[in-house]
Image (cartoon, rainbow, N blue to C red; front, side):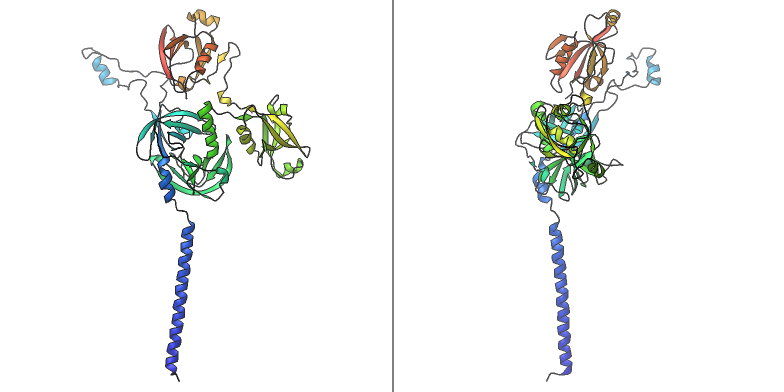
Length: 487
């Protein structure tokens, strides 16, 4: 027979053991839960270690245009001159003209896409740059050359003279899922090799005046200097180029936008092979399909692009597209929203014939449209209705016109073209409207200018960034002016 106090003691030990076992079990369960949570969070260390070397810092120098009027400068006087002391005391010495203003410098990022030195970045990072310096992760520095830039997509391809360089692996943006982890490497505010992470917030975003790029929206912290840098998925593949942010302060506010890498690679391929980007057009104005409009037009669902107008004699008009049609598929690709159509049309090869599926009068129809070529309105030549003028869309930024008979008499002009307007490269020189361009010197050869066709042919043959000299007449004086052709 066990004594009563012994039984109570044993029961107490059993109770304490059970309590302790439960506590240990809870602790173990909590540890396992925390371990599972930690394991679920991404580890970016390997990604950064393997891909960071392919990310570069880009410093671009833009030369400010000289002032329209030359500032007053103190004359060079001998110390024995009675006026020397006056100018020394009362007239401040001005900096030498035209370098009164310092050059502008912009910082951005980029990434190497091939071991022979090709680098992708944003067009706005290298826009109007006189010199581009690329710093690698190992601190080596190279001067870069712009192969081509496309302002519409904000993609630029540059190259450095180097070999056996580390380069990124490209991914598939179509396989990207909303909510997926992504990571950016770049140089925000000049802090090189900075790493930030977040998730994909949305895909296929359309931004104002950016109809040709289906942006990837993320909440990755992007700031000035990140522009042109890569956006990686967790597999270490580049799926986008960080391009824009939405901000009311100028800094990051949780909305970042990246150019899908497949769009960027198509642009760089065209820049490399053709020197420019060709985009398709069909000549329609469109609007979004709402639920009410879908019901009105007899559509099974609110999807597609409603044609609000058709340009006369456009590819769409010739192909049979009419006002009130709803385009639901173009070239085999579904049009879910009206914003999809410009991107899909732009991606089509100009001159190709594509299938277009529409809804008309509540029934589906199939059409065939020959795609035209889209032209940027800002690049269209400006025509002078009277004398005919060469547009300022050439690489020199000069709009010229043949002189009138009166101008020839008043200015004693035997040949040459009169400057009507200056933009771009010409605006950064001392050439002003009213000057007469008498000749163009390029490749060691001077060619007199007498016809607009001569100038247009020479300007079209210029290579990007080629140095050109013009013989310019102003009043009774002539002088040679050098400028660099636009890239």
